[in-house]
Length: 69
Length: 264
Image (cartoon, each protein chain N blue to C red):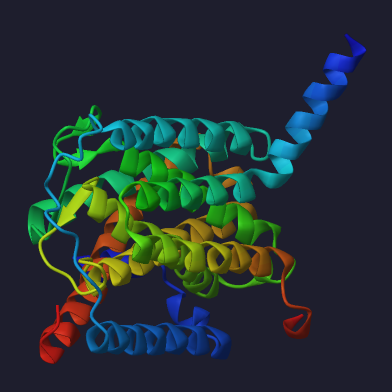
């Protein structure tokens, strides 16, 4: 019982903290998989390039820029 | 009508145009001009036969629809653990109505795109999974702005521009693939068949929604005793309409600019 509660808490903590990361990643991975299934190497490449850029943009904004503080 | 609505809702709009806001707006303009020219100069292949059944019984369409429902459910659950109940209701109701009206109005007025007719959940012309996804994406953006130690203290215009860029960073990678599969169809476009105006529209729509939401949230924080749930809801929903005025102006300008270049 105690173990379950700990697991629930831990999962909820991960969900609270990483919801944006999980959502953005799932969305991009879904569309990259779709492009791969369509046999469109150009769209896979586009997804592979845009995914980290998009992820980094969210991360940069979330972290803030100490220079502008 | 639009101007008086706008002034009633945003009487201190000019005070938001700080040097940083001007720089950000200028950056957005430069990004769109350079992006449009690049897309025009280096044409990308259009999808072959976009209306074709891919022989998967629309498995990806179904996954997309179920994913939209899951994304919205998780976003509401996440928000309810972070925000007060009133804010969750007001935010998601206004976002849902905004996205639905925006998509439906665009399809009806421009006729530039349409959604896959085989979708399960459709309201009038709009696939509901898009509206659900919209709400989840905008929630993620607002959450990111809220968490940022720097951006959270910026004014609504500045936050709106950052939000617009974040939304653009998502759409850039997914729209072309969605069109190639047939989740939705564009009449004509240069970026893998997607028109540049789609990206301008994304930026503008998210900019206006985040701007008005952040502005009204600021007002609510100043005098919380004046704003009960009903009033908050009325204000946020009413703020959608000046948004449309601004949006039409912005999209109108971009259309004009692209038509001048002969590259809509």
